[in-house]
Image 1 (cartoon, helix red, strand yellow):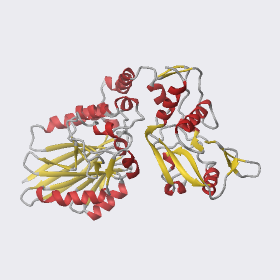
Image 2 (image 1 turned 90 degrees about the vertical axis):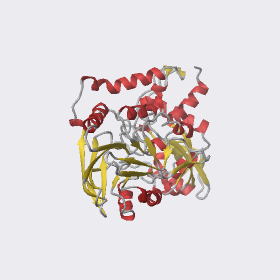
Image 3 (image 1 turned 45 degrees about the horizontal axis):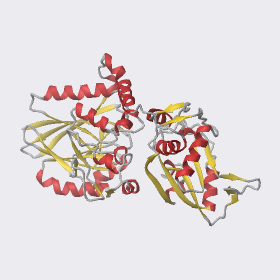
Length: 455
């Protein structure tokens, strides 16, 4: 006898809620339609549902996202790097306390030996006809960040393979919820052919009808809530195998809308503002932003860096400031408006020769007007690179704090973590570095402002 199983999946919403009302209605309607049938439905999310560049997520530290997932009746969720490394340990530990769904991550544990109650390596769902489906998962191994935040992560593909070996004898079907990215999924398909499908995320790839690799079906649903994926399986209980797999993506922009949908995001923002309306400090003067040269905001932020982080010089793009900061009472919403990025400060150790090389590279003419997406940047354009306590003198020698740098002497450069992944400065990827966690740029700004301005 053939059984039909539907898996509805979302990924990388990143707190973009434009289509969320339609998405939630669709998911609940499909559940209602199948409730009295012999077919089984499981609804899953593959991580990065939250993104602290959204003020509702920021104000609720992700718990508002959990409420949305609960309301939409999700069954299983895994975490992405936005859940995993943009919250401090206690905030992640308690993030899913009120979740009505399972949370599975197979390659992460707490360094203190006390894992949160919600954390599972895998989970099993039994269909209406008794078929057992095992779900395994892993998240991208940003080990340096997780370690600083009090978590231990392991190599994700190996963690999945080990969990599949443990789980496979007890279930009929094994499915993987991956927040590893397209190319990691392709390697996993080759290494773990026992998987029927790998639900993909992290690299925001789009597979309209899935792709087969080593007879494992891979999916990809883009980003920002563009799509809902639906994998339909037929399982033959007598033959004990899946006889049919079909993947499709549903374009959320084409789903029916309701009149109140247009106000959904504004309602969430208003709710968040009501939670964060107390002034953080009072700003005695207007601070302007400029994207192509120094500004009052950039100078203030440079002072904040040097006041709180040990370093010899600093470098960051002017485009990190999305707007001006106005005189008067400054709330959490105001700071988030100008610095929405989930970006951390990083201190790089470079010798004089490396520092000068990076300084010269930073004048890349293609960067200032680049509309950067990813690496934590949530601005409009990168803007010009700004330098503090460092300059070229008339002899084209680099000076730090007025002194010509020595080629072999080590200097500490205060900069942004987005530059350390090799995209901008390849040498930064391998340099000795310290990430200033869990604080974002707006936290550094806030702590300094609260010290020098009265509330």
